[in-house]
Image (cartoon, rainbow, N blue to C red; front, side):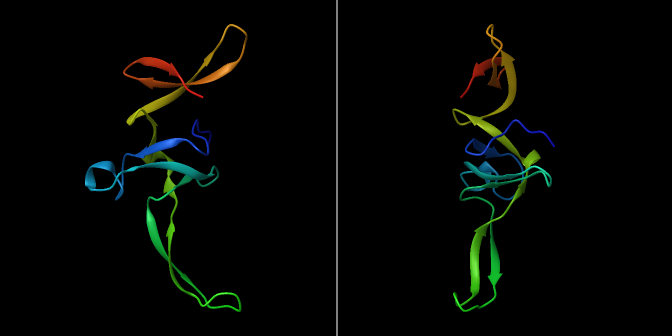
Length: 109
């Protein structure tokens, strides 16, 4: 699936257990995008427990880890508010990403 989100974008979770209004901050930075499975991993959010088998290098046990969340459950964060993303083409032919907030198109990096 094509997505306009990139690694390093600040996003807000709009659905699920880490949604902003349930005591969680609900906002974080994308650390990984899996385009085939349509999932993103967000730094510090959607934590789960993973059981690690003991090996020669580590003792094993339970480790808390950020788990992937479906890409449809996150939105780009522009100044703390959720925003849709789009593209504009400048006069010189360059394509730039824009945040669409309240009908206004604001250029982002």
